[in-house]
Length: 229
Image 1: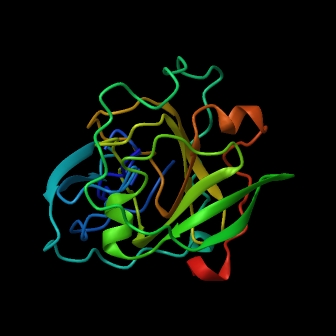
Image 2: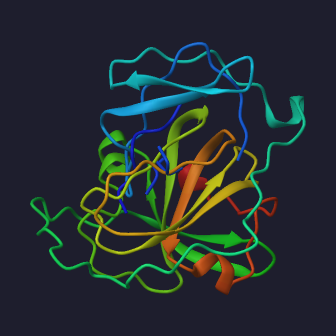
């Protein structure tokens, strides 16, 4: 799916209903884009001091947030997986999937270990353009394939499914590789923002249902390849 630009993805990122817990920046930073990319213009959601989420408009020109505390500097924020997965969306490709107007070359790939034993061969999206594009226009993806987004900063990110034709699971990952939250079974071709409550630096997108099929849960870790650091 396409990521919406990061919340202060999707998906993310977001992702921003797209898109576990987080730090509170004083100002939203430049949104991350994606599928699954983060959206070029998106809302940045930051919790208020009272714990209530407030929404600010975000754009590429938004100012950077205050530096986030290291995950070791505070109690770990984890958004737990729901007891029951949301309904499974129809498999892709979605009817009405738009043609890819750019036909961009594939990104570099790296093996990513996920949880106790799962692995994904992930494309690495690092540039703003690649993050914004995400998995848009894809009509299929292998069971052990995915896309790993290295985002602009550690914060709450949001993703969306604009022009994204295959349903996805989105794993939001902190800078040390800890999965801080998952958005499951995100349906195709919609612009609802997806996110989790916790800050992240990475988002890993895989096929819808992959997380539960492989026994992956928030609190577990992924291996961050050198190409994504």
